[in-house]
Image 1 (cartoon, rainbow, N blue to C red):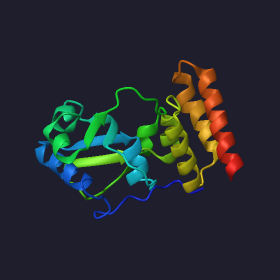
Image 2 (cartoon, rainbow, N blue to C red; image 1 turned 90 degrees about the vertical axis):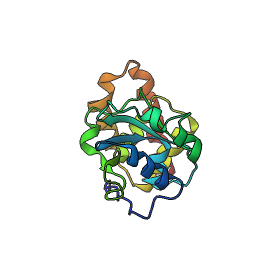
Image 3 (cartoon, rainbow, N blue to C red; image 1 turned 180 degrees about the vertical axis):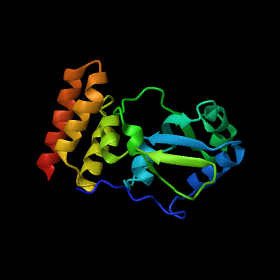
Length: 185
């Protein structure tokens, strides 16, 4: 059951992303880690070829740096590169997701480190929103990584379900997703 993500090489991040991130790094006075989610992760870490215009991140460590002002919507960097950082204040990730993060571009930057959730955590982060794009992402990552639906279900029950407000809705959504990916295999 292969679940290890292969970190990308220094040359694998295309323009304008690399230049955008290098400029962000040049503005940093201390090391920063971003726990990324969303389209940037599925495109540039998991390999789904689709456009995205931002880097969604859930957590920045340390949290006291104003990344929105630096590179968020309306910032000079966002205007220059026509892409942006986007802090996602609310998302559902499994309890221990941080222990399974993988650095996306090791060695590319000195002070800036971007991390991606493992594929099961990525899928579970999509559960709440459940748009057609989310379902497409789930289908892609499940098949591309040859994931095990039992592992997904167990992680959901142990690390995410206890913290959700509408368990029945999420149970049904996850059951539907599992049915879709298993039927297609």
